[in-house]
Length: 282
Image (tube, rainbow, N blue to C red; front, side, top):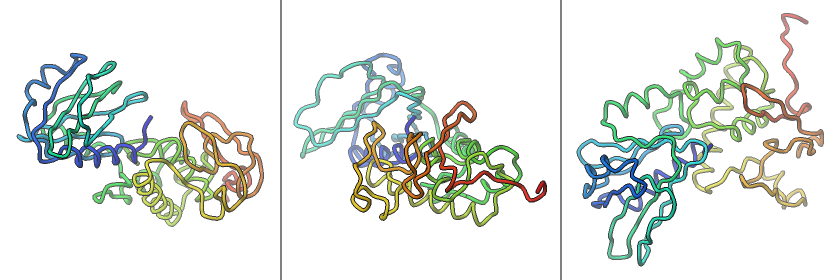
């Protein structure tokens, strides 16, 4: 599932390609046809992300609420000489003309594509946890949930009502960089550890927006610095532990481990992220 940086980058791309212009809105697949007809010809105001949700705003306080789910994509093209015919199951198409070339965007495979008003948009955002990519995020609110929970921190970080936008890759990498075992109970963390992890997520995810991929290794652990081959993976980017089961840790050389937590694979280094042992039982 796309993580928060993908949605933030997509919001910026849509805003750059369409904001301030009237757009032709259609649903070649037909599932969004009635709502598309209401929006057709409206000026697109802009787009924003909140966690893994995307809101495309059109004039009249109307929003297209999109959640890509596991297989969804929203392909944006700007400055094209000619808009091609839609290919595949395009649920939503946006088209705008410009003297420098047309722009178009095709939404496919999304689990959600709804026309909503500002009240519903605000309700969805209010139900989300702190988003490291949003200026209005409140990491202290997330901390109050974490510090009282017996659930593993690796589970809490994927709870979108606690921390919004973080997925399996950023979860694994932030925990590694913070030297925190994914099965450590949330209540056992110190506030300083949480604040350092939050700041790390803010910086890593902002870099993800800039680069369009997830890179989490520090300069001394890049392929160039270590003289190793670049990572080959369909997720792209250089990482420490994500999907590196059995491979040597880039820091200590121990084999990376994996386990299933709440239906998702977790990854960690047993030396760099030692298991937590409460002093109360020592």
